[in-house]
Length: 391
Image (cartoon, rainbow, N blue to C red):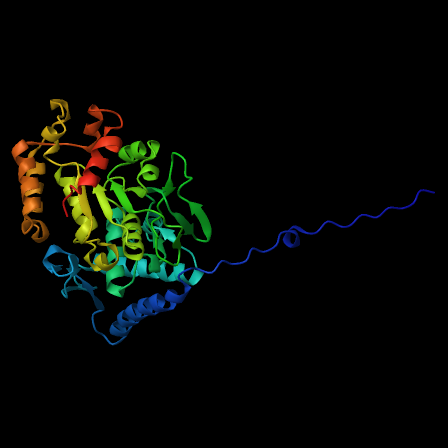
């Protein structure tokens, strides 16, 4: 008689897979404070309603009229002005509702220990108001502005609201980054580089093996690719970053931390046009809309290496690189000349006037007309050696 064999009964699906350990939010120690601030805002609205008074709250004004230039510190700062957001005011009721909607969404994220993108927050609070054909938000731009209002009202960082932005910006060079516990050697990032995240706070990002002498920040990915392919960061012992145009908060925060914590000079290679000048201004002094963040974003010691209005003649460039200034460019250039930090700087006044006198603007890529690697092998090395920059 054959011997009877027995088989182990397979474990049920529920017991076969171990339950993953819940990862503690890096913001755990700040969540209680943020949650309490949101609760206080909500309690104020409820208390007013129950007592028969109009629900309202104050929001700091994010406008040029409430932005002050702190000359001694070299940064833009927000003033004390506020605007009232009232439920029964037809001009403010929509924003009142939107603020509470996003506040509710943020409170849920904190409670669940999860994060959401700016786009996700837009959809989280998007719906048609009952009994109408009106939606809570027309577009994401409207949603983003309300989130910034909540930031400044609560005195909290966007990261503390558990909200992040789309990644935009790249880094490579002599540094190792620890990102959410993962060690990333930026010397070995190939042709793509390390994508700078939108959240660059110490709880998430730490640095080690920082062996660079400075940071070279370029405006666009196309220029960054040339520097990376030519291994400029290796031959000149630096960190190479790009902001894909106007740098995000994440890129600016990364630059700020490396500058403040490791003493790395930030040198900018941007286009010779009003928009390149504005990007430099934002990196250096901060921006009007985010003046409340200047303490952790602005780098007053940042330098502008080029491209410069004088380079058309100095580098013997051809007429092909000229991009005629239009009326919008001219108006923008004059506005920038009037900024207090540029108005009192003779070198910058000469720079912008020279561009206006030329009647054209130029992109960094125009240097390619000299040679594919002219910018990496000649232009930037010579400017660095001569310390030929604006500050």
